[in-house]
Length: 258
Image (cartoon, rainbow, N blue to C red; front, side, top):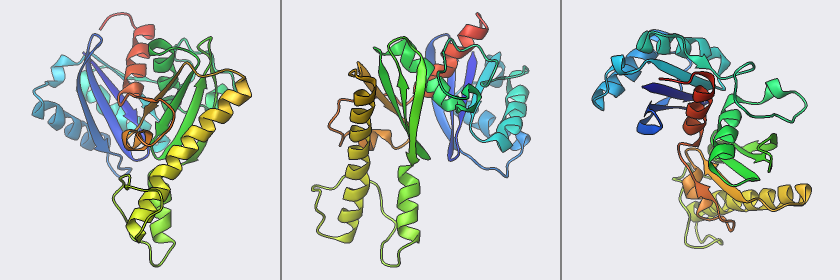
């Protein structure tokens, strides 16, 4: 079995694969204070809770945008599987041609998402990742990664709004019944949900204008994606496991059997 790990600034998503079948998806909070031993114990406990034993895994692959934790998680994965993890980065075979100024600067999560999009969806494809940051990547008709847009994520924007103003509260993120709110909470929810949905629609329009071509597909992933894209005017596919799927595909390009 293959253990896939997508380490983000807020959450760590883990997927357990037997062949191409995803058996388990789970999530940990990213904690920069934890050691490799602590992460290993936590992952093993979660796997055991779902009836999966550590000896089932013979390999692992990881993407990380948290450099200070990459080595700790790699060590934890080695404890669990008995083998060194593939850490997605420069030199890893992905099959993806990266057409930007410095390909080494592309986040490994963006690479994994683009690989999955190129293999699973009609091209050109726009990949919307709503995590700590909101990112929209372009995978062109040839399956090449052409770049992306990056904006402050939904949670960051909400936290800034609540912390920098005296009278605005922390709120639960859900779409209100109307755009024009009649109270503070509805107004904040409207600005956040409909505002981010409009930004996604608008950026997709501008990307298509720039490349002079309509996207054949738009796919969204990330912890907050499902709630936001419901309010988008564009037709957007939701794939919660897009990055994990990309990691599986990349692993298969590097090691044929597992």
